[in-house]
Image (cartoon, rainbow, N blue to C red; front, side, top):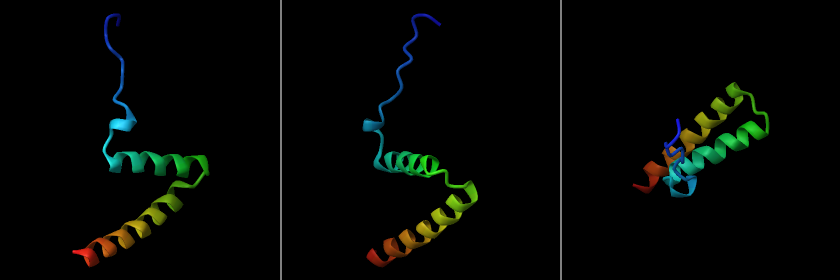
Length: 57
């Protein structure tokens, strides 16, 4: 595989939602949060954010 450019896009250039997702994954993994607990918590956050988004429209 010589001659191929193996550079990946920089996270700095990623959209804000991707940056936030990466940060959240890092936070959950570094704190050893169980997947089921993380999913439950994220569902609560999602519901809350949707309510806040609808109230602003």
